[in-house]
Image (cartoon, rainbow, N blue to C red; front, side):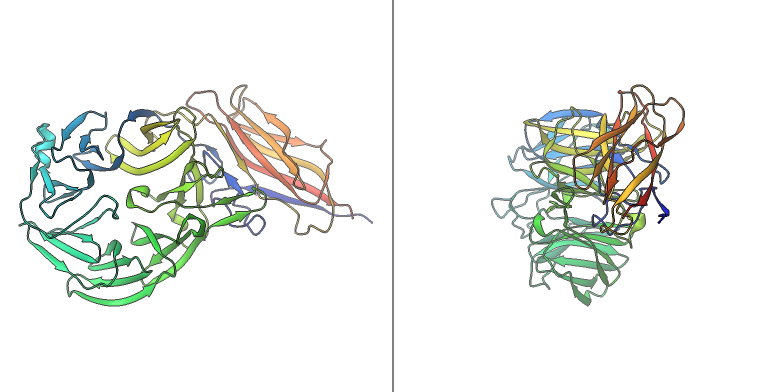
Length: 479
């Protein structure tokens, strides 16, 4: 009896990492690191390399922007510019917890050990002139904030800014007049705004819709798990929920509807957990154009990676990628503390503050494509297993077709295969000099129940990257 040949083509991997080893679309992969699978749907290439590193002695609590420049504020009371020069040192000897811009000022909130004024500010014009005349605001607002509390966060309006401490929310006017709104029973974790409506996220899973004009709460709903951190992008909220990273869930909130976007994934083929999101504080999330960046545990569990989500697929469980897992010296990132996007006029930058190779350091990555850059040196993409819709029948490979681009003697793509859970074996190293290379392999007549591929990228420290387009597997059932 003759069996008809079957064919599966895996291409256009821009839908990101799949949620299941087998229940997947062919536009997804089992796992990928240090590759860019969102930039172009036609091929996969290497991520940008970290281009600059500065070692530090103290923790960076976060960054802020002013006059098209980025600054960092630290636990040792200092303000640094983007070249890591100290611009100002506070004499209060208290860690800086938060900084934000409002009404022509940059405000700094310091840790409080006594009930007194600990809010400082400097004019933007002072920053432009380089004088940094920072003054304490002497109004007696009854706040009491310690470093181990959740960092307070500000929502800016034209005439007011809002800040929350424990279960209270305060509005502060241009005249430094504070109004307290004590209408919640639980500590506030985060507030986002859509027009005149605030979505107030509390520690006990409840989300309240609060109209700041009428000062009324119009709607409640529950996330269903503890809210750990939130970031807003294009009127949609991305919520990291769960009691710990071992119970991670990402919930997307659009208008009045919460939907589970992703949950912690357990992979049999990777033998590790995927999407153990560690983001517990606002400084561990960032957004850039249509991409949200999260902090997560790596597959090794001992390190941290940057996980990205492409928000153009906001209604789909897709678009997740792991673009950055190493520092600029190719060491694992032990702990990732802060992520920050700087939308500079000269190009967009992603700042990372980390501990790697027993050093505290700041690194940045240029995201804008017209700026000069280099790529990551090497990493891989692993496809989902292919069983041609049944694991009960044994198959035989007839031939494999691969499409790649921009390879040469030192910029190569290595194709490996794994049959029935066995280790990966090299199938072909492609080093063609042509812009598009079609490779057909007819000699690998292996028998299998399922097969998966690993695509290894190797780069030689120039501003080019190999490109991987697709792989086609043609097989015949033999039983």
